[in-house]
Length: 264
Image (cartoon, rainbow, N blue to C red):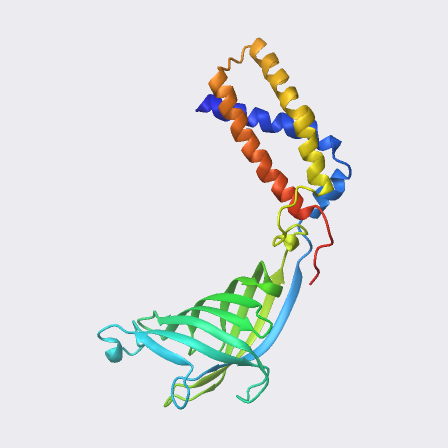
């Protein structure tokens, strides 16, 4: 097994060294996969949690046997589909929904462990996760990802209670988000299908087909003369693994090799 792994490493290193100088515009290709500068996005909106009344947006789906006797409602689990608006008034413009769940996870303080997606009206999302200590004036939670305009998002969300009715349980939370977006040029085209007709990918393929196999076999013959013993089965198995890796590389080069990456 160790010999096979050594063969595969040698295959890959020799092929990259032999092929990459033949690809025109190699610096441009490498530039496509370098990370872009981060873009900071700030958002401000209001989160409407409606526990009771007409059309509640939060529902208890599970609870511990003694939850109602707990001063912190420990052991309760709720699902939510709360409105997000651009102002504190419930009739303000809708900018999205907060969909997910939270669990009451504190014994000595009311603490909600939240896992919620903020789904905006353009279908972009931000995923938030963390503890919401509801009686603290300011709470901060982590942004752990996103989709659409927020792919590769990271950052934090700050909650402040704008309104809370202890009788009904309904609340309005003021939310501020600071999110950093970092996307490589190649990742911007991650939904593109592989296309081996792309000039850069085709150049890699042609170079390997015309020169790579013969060059590698010659090099391994030389290595054998220098004391590296390779039986036929080991060589063929290593070559197969190498070709599989090569096809994966070509597919990725194809997906980033053409077009103009989308901008934020």
